[in-house]
Length: 591
Image 1 (tube, rainbow, N blue to C red):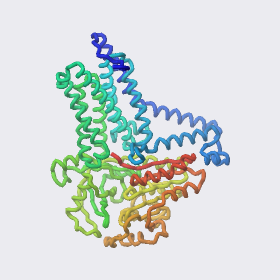
Image 2 (cartoon, rainbow, N blue to C red):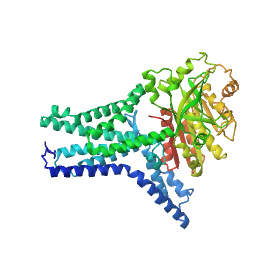
Image 3 (cartoon, rainbow, N blue to C red):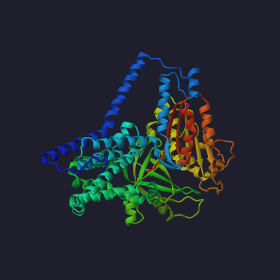
């Protein structure tokens, strides 16, 4: 074949041994290079921290940020004087650019730019390692592709774990953000394995031994593993996950546990990597069980006039401080066997999965955390809806209340670790956007910021469909929540909380004591807390905030529908491009 350098070579025993050594060497490089960030980044951070401390002690020159020259250059997009200010501007611009979405035909989201950059760079690196030193040996290339892919399984497993997360510790992040790179690496590994499969099949067909080799035990195990991998990748596409999360989870659950033992017998040279991946998985399993409260007593309540369910979970006193220290955190909820509606296979498979829910409030007096869930078609919310419907009065204006038990794992999340750094990191203003139940994230963060610094200039913009969907927050603010704001006992009286009612306001007054709150929510749009009967003008709100101080740094957080997050980011982008110091966080659960 023109330009194809590889041939089917017949090697001596000595050459085969050299090939085995070469395979092990390059696979080892690929494996260690994937783990390098965990080892190198903390060291770089330590060196940078000490160097910064040394510079501060010496007292170096720094451009005055408020000088007219710097302002003029920032407004023109130039950043500053060809030194520190210019470098900072370029760094901020690069980070912002990498955080933007990549879209196909302007509509279909294909991930963020940083994911594509990491994916392309890493795929190129692994392909280079797959080719180097293979000479003209076709089978060497074929085997190398498979072994390089196997060498990535331990970091692939590490990137998917929730409790045992060295990458999250290193990058000062959390599992849900690191999981993005798990998906990227998964696609790269899948591509390498596809090449491995195609090249081996070409060899079998060209050599006339396809029927003989395809059904050999060592090949059959690889075929089974590849079949599971194909199923895993097919069910991981967003359309399939939206259609049935149960199918995605079940295939994932089986494949993750079955592929390592199958490959263990298929490829002896990859066994060290397979054992390492299994060990990481077992360590995470133990760590997750240590973070789980099993069969925790839980009270379920409907929120009248909505499709929301409030879940109050009683936790041991020793666990509450962990949640107080991480506002905006979330937990993973699983249905224990004792709480299942039935013991059918469908219920069993649903119980294997766990769903994330943000902790909306913490009540230290009763020792409970509260969660707000919207009834959807997922296994957990379907289960909660079934429990409530079994004792429901079928009246929208009354509250249905039942008790059950749930397995609670957590807390998880990165934002709780960042609240103190937001206050101590020089951010002059903090802007929070929430859509619907996204306020379960935004409100605890808002309260925690004010709890630590009552003078903080923080504003919360909350858009809900109806007044009824905000009553849970009113109840939380008047029920002795440990993170209640010093400014006000109710968010309705807080001028820094702007509530927008975007849907139908028609709802009968509740009879369970929330009538006064509903009346407050029906006030005219003149007051911030009373509610504006319209959608928030995101562009105006952001522009007004940034114009209040031309040199102020702004932290922007959003938790809501995908469209809201995209709109907020698009409105913040011009200010970030001009060089304003912007800290951005979008809270979302994609997997």
